[in-house]
Length: 103
Image 1: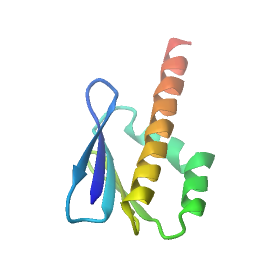
Image 2 (image 1 turned 120 degrees about the horizontal axis):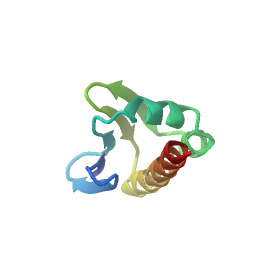
Image 3 (image 1 turned 90 degrees about the vertical axis):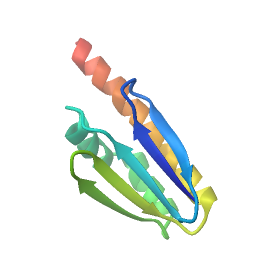
């Protein structure tokens, strides 16, 4: 089972379950903030803690019209945990971006 989390136009992440795969894919659609979020994520301590906590986790960044973080994990619990944390990191990013734009 895999999980796809994608950003919709309301700045929320949508999650859907895909069957017959062990891969969770986190996607964000094209926005002016896309490269900012990618930089934010790469330097985020919590994201690096997630990677250390799940040594079996394989991930890659693909930057196309959107970017994808491919997560391969041995079980659905790991994927659920990682996607939950990615959602939280993403929401923190949105809040920090709003704070900066209002300043």
